[in-house]
Image 1 (cartoon, rainbow, N blue to C red):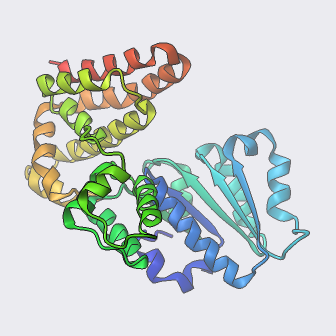
Image 2: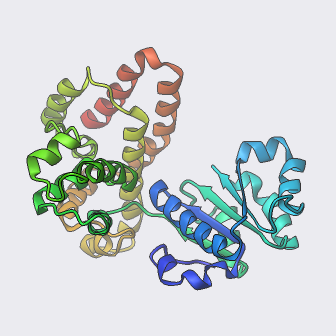
Image 3: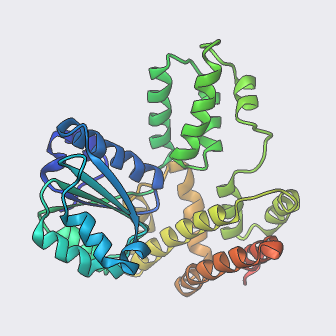
Length: 335
């Protein structure tokens, strides 16, 4: 059964009608938030719930241990919540077994990355009425502004529009990053409820550096002069290569999705306006430019190569900067 992420908070009381939840997609912060809501609802039923965390490889390596967790009673409580991370189609058979037996008072939350429409795990959770499937799309600026306003209101903190925009910019459209910055502000606000823009810049260590997504957008737009200028400033810095590769992957996959529809519909504006998750209005001209630059075949090649570059960076930390920036330069300079 499919549920939209925004429906979770609205229908908390009906959330535990099913014991099986699949949370898939790029937005790890949203998945954590949904898991927290599910935990809260379970805790209302049983304050002594036992929490168990497993990874897919642990289940594959020790099936008996997994089935023991799923079917055996708890020594400490009558309810269990089992969270499984990094799940893929490799464990589909094990979930079909557990779903068929429906162990009483045991809840399962499954975390997965992007699952395409052919995924067996996704299909199982979307079609079975005894399961709940939630897609976790990336946040947009409007989502992050809502989170910011709610958190500031809780602590009775006043920030200017300029300060809020800076926080959202610094977050790289990641609610986890945003919340980390908000925690700094909350701690500072214990002695000062009204914080000015310069204080915000100081608190979040903002030095006017480039946003990660700006670097990637310049690359995908083939603005090679601007890209080289940014690289010159970033090359000696400590950067999170894997994080940037994930952002690149998300942006390339979004372009792919639109490009695949482009052959069926002539109106590119209509496709962009109907894309899910919604594209922020400021980004739409940039997306159109990138779509005009890239062919479907080239986007697919980049998407396939990203995983290989990530593995190479992890295996070769001494030269990972060279591997990383050479890959981006190859994209930016491609004819």
